[in-house]
Length: 506
Image 1 (cartoon, one colour):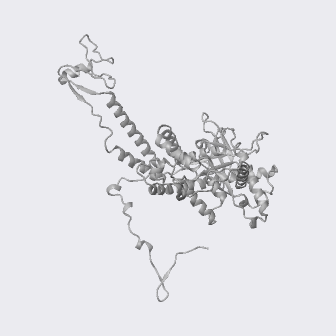
Image 2 (cartoon, one colour):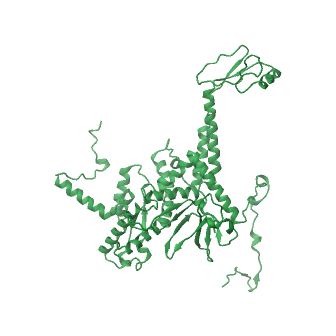
Image 3 (tube, rainbow, N blue to C red):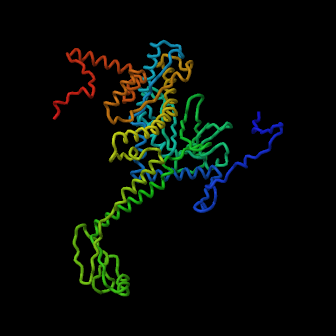
């Protein structure tokens, strides 16, 4: 069925011919005049050029992050806030849809959580990182390179509770082999099928080898329904196949800012080391002759008298000049009064490009009150929360499903994995809370939310950083209550802030 544009008719039923261009107006920003005269954006007409530009940006990001504390601090801020100490699953299984009893669902929840917790310490293929550390690395890779690649091999090892493992690979290893550049199915190291779905990735074996396909691993994306590679990026444009670093629009600012700070620092070092500059009254001809005969050690090459042109001075040293020489003390007036406002503007531009308020990104809370700090945190948390949701949905959940499938095959799960709908194993991935400005108020808000059925106790415990499930928390609380009762100690009730007795405070 072909949808045609509507046709207008007059009072007699005859079609009215019209043209939409009659109502279109010229766009001033499309003119080539004035300040826009030389603005001609350059397009890329093939995938090879796009891949080359992406690799150049990645290399520059690596370089600036290795040398600039501001760029490296941005990456650490994202990873430490989004991931923190790790993400934990919080299950919400509907008993009516699953057809299972509440007791059975509670048992399965505990089994799934125990399976995940047992696996997370063996999640790294090399046995060096926990699952939380892998997530931390993935978030840093997402900010730094705009994407991450994780291989999911099955390792046969009796010491491992599960065979599933994770291997994080460097994004720059994924590229198109030189002899397959003209293969239309491969774009920037990603191979697609006829439906434009990614089916395989080309990973280079070693950087010392040439880029021919014999030095690449072709790893399929899936084996049946199980993932072998998880590749995630947040696309900025339609039909995009690889991620671009989040720092890409700010690279020039980072580089210029770093150079500016280095120049300012060097200027202050020079000012502190050299206390004065000596000006002589020699005529230009004699001055040129003297400079022409000065050697590297500060002496003339002939047998004439000693002539010093440059002298390294220890800070605080006093130099007595000769008659006819005029000292010019170098004033230590740098940085000037505009230094801090100027650098603050640059930092705000970087923060704006990342969508994070300046005080949160650079941890600069000077002169802020409670309301300003809270509003900045809420705005920043929208971005951090989206990143957490993305990594939970794109990586944590598929890996979690594969763990539970293997647990069923190992008789560690009392439900048939293949008979249950996929949504049965879905979890809400919760990490550390966004931070408490006033802990008493935050806790009171959680208590009110629980009393009005807006939050569950399990959710609050997980948000507060608890890594255990709710059942184990309740068991621990019961054990503590019994222990206190055995020793004759009463529980301390919650005391409201306005009921505190501060009479004994110094």
